[in-house]
Image 1 (cartoon, one colour):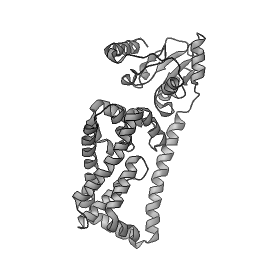
Image 2: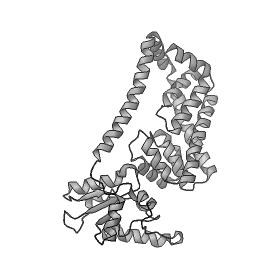
Image 3: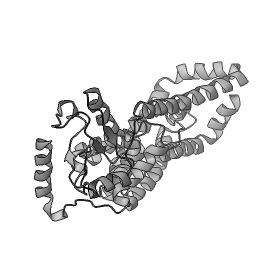
Image 4: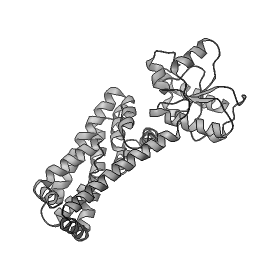
Length: 327
């Protein structure tokens, strides 16, 4: 532990830069504790708060700009990839989209305070066409607010944190092992939470090939598009009706409870579709299956998609509203 403190004292700026950069790139290496310790060092006069803040903001901007460019180039697919490698539950795409589309670029001011959202919000900013200068301004302010809060708290409670660190130093290798054990426990908990979340949504799926064959044979099931309304303009499966997660509790299907129902979304592990499916199963519908891979897999396979022209967005919105009304 004393070695760690010496490293922080000698290479504090490098460690802050590396930790913030790696965390914002998506690695499970929390930078907030490092920033707190850096605030303590600033309180002891070893570093300037302004210098530490500038280093943290630059590191965050570099990492976030990488995700912004990835979102600009690859669109929403990059967010799905992010959630698949993230330790955060897969609802992160849906929640981040809702937050960003509700508040726009100003959402970047608070995204870093929500675990797992920083990288996704940056990719979403790129995929949604946010101008780069606007992104840099809002993301930079958000990074300054996030890192500045940690540095300020570390400076404010420097005496208490100093005592804690001295206690860990006195413990020698056991102090180091305790810190490493806490980090390992954090990663293990996030992994377990993700696995538990995914396991709770396990159920039989239907493949895109099977659904396409049913459509071609005239035996189409009830198809429910569970995406948020703002995500349907890029196309949907023929015959699909629209239902959101929020309105699923009041959904009444005019079918036999054993009739086949297929649900799809555009999220990793078919999370939203599986959640709606669970609600329908709990209400007595028995033949409910999410579509493996969702709309993205369906589109990538080259199967038919009903699309809407960009210049006809108003008509598309009315069509979406009509579909929701008649589900």
